[in-house]
Each structure stands twice: as structure tokens, then as C-alpha cells.
Length: 125
Image (cartoon, rainbow, N blue to C red; front, top):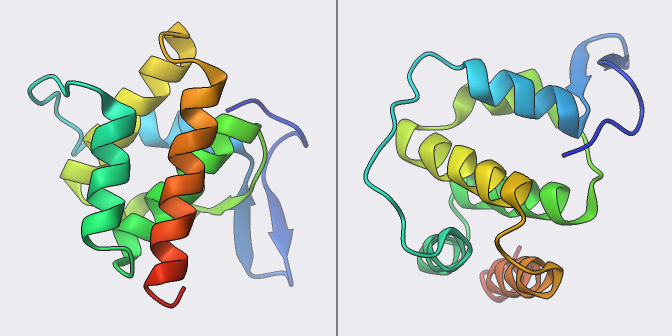
């Protein structure tokens, strides 16, 4: 996730928003993250998780993170970063690593975002 707008800013004076780059920094320093077993294809695993529970808060946040990695845009609240459970956090860190390594094509990322958004829409989101 690249930083499009600099650091954090405040919306309505109360909620601190983080750019995609700042969110990545925050996610990587979260203490409860522990490396888990390798995930076969992290994009497929993330989409499957979203499709299994599309209305779940963790799934919705995972969809937004996928979109932020894919399109290099979006803002997140610091509280959202803190709300990730350890399993989702591990998945997000893996996705960030895969994105940085460039091992998946842009089309793979776009398809993953489209599938995640379709699952959310199907769940009434």
C-alpha cells in the first residue's frame, strides 16, 4: 500500500485516519501477530474466507485491505487496525508480503477484489 496523502489526519476532529502506507506500518508492528503456517495461495484463501462470512466485520475489513493493496488507495481508522483478530492479521501480513514480492499478477488481485466485493453484495452489504 503506498502513501498517497502523507501521514494520518483527523476527520471531524475525532477519528484518526491512516493512509494505506501508515496502515501497513501499523499492521506490521502489532504485537499479537505470530507467523502461522504458510498459506497456499493467499489471495484464494482471503477470498474464500470472505465468501464464507461476508457480513463478518473481519471479512469486510479484509475486503477493504485487498482493495487498498490492489488499487493503492483508501483510508483506515487506527481502531480498525487494532480490531483485527490474530488469524486475519496473519492473513493480511501474508497478503502484504505477497503484494510486495509481486508473485501474483495484477489481474489476480483485481479478480480477488471483485470476488470479495461480490460476496459482500450477495450478503446484503
